[in-house]
Length: 199
Image 1 (tube, one colour):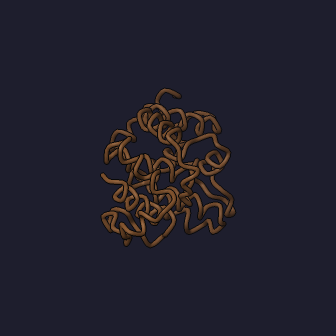
Image 2 (tube, helix red, strand yellow):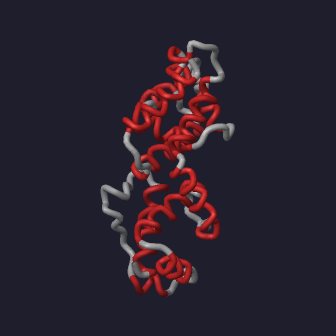
Image 3 (cartoon, one colour):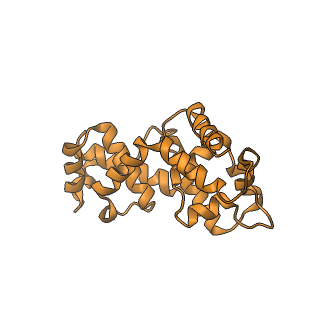
């Protein structure tokens, strides 16, 4: 990829993560941007450097990792550190998911197989347990995305939660979801394994 192509990918992903109406995959990452306007940007060397440092798929996930940290997409907040942290999370998703499920279930007494659904329970428009733990930094965004990808809780939450905090989390989950790899069958097994270990 050239620096200009990296820049176009950045613009497309910025629209994906900031605009409800734009989906990176639906539009195949297409955006309007001229090479001439790119060459006039002060930060063009940032994109040219990325083009030489990473291959195409790495650049995509470099941006995804950084947009998760800073959804507004300020280049100054982008870093290799954010990308490395994301890679570590991605390589240990199953382990982290089990840790998060264990922590969520610890809020209840056994038998735990009856309690998993309760972490999504909403009462009197109060945030459910799963959301409270995410906002407290106890569980990771990937766990929320996996739960949505494989169990689909967002539409249910939408009928009961209208606060701006939920809307922000919802936006992050839905925009990140298409980039999270892994089969639901695998993730369901991880969840069931953790529930069984607590029996």
